[in-house]
Image (cartoon, rainbow, N blue to C red):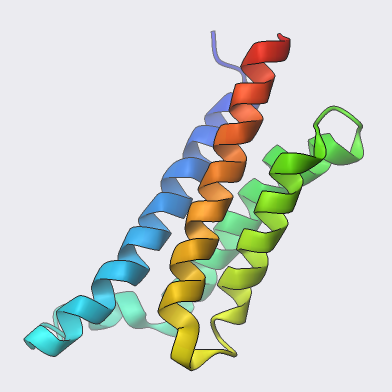
Amino acid sequence: MKDKTQNKDAWGITLSLLCAVHCAILPLLLPLGLSKTFAIMAHPAIEISVIAMTSYFVYTCILRPYMNQKLPVQPVILAVVGLTLVILHFFLPVYATLAVVIGGLSIAMAHVVKLKWHFTTH
């Protein structure tokens, strides 16, 4: 039976991957004239909401267990680097797409590494 942490990790993986795919595909759709269709997806409020939810999952699934000495450092490093890249995309407009895609994949990988560690130790 899954516990709450595994369920949150699954949501964190899903959210991070959807964020990475969204940020990779959106710039490809804009030149095709589909910008009005997907304009809501590029709204800053949507981006900030997704970053807030991602931060919540990173904190509850990765940072808090690490602070309680129940998690190795590898997922923490991946999550912090990924979250930093996702947040920095606001300040690096030229590299925004690359930063968010790598950041989202890094956060998803942090959740996967944490789940793998969880299953091998329990």
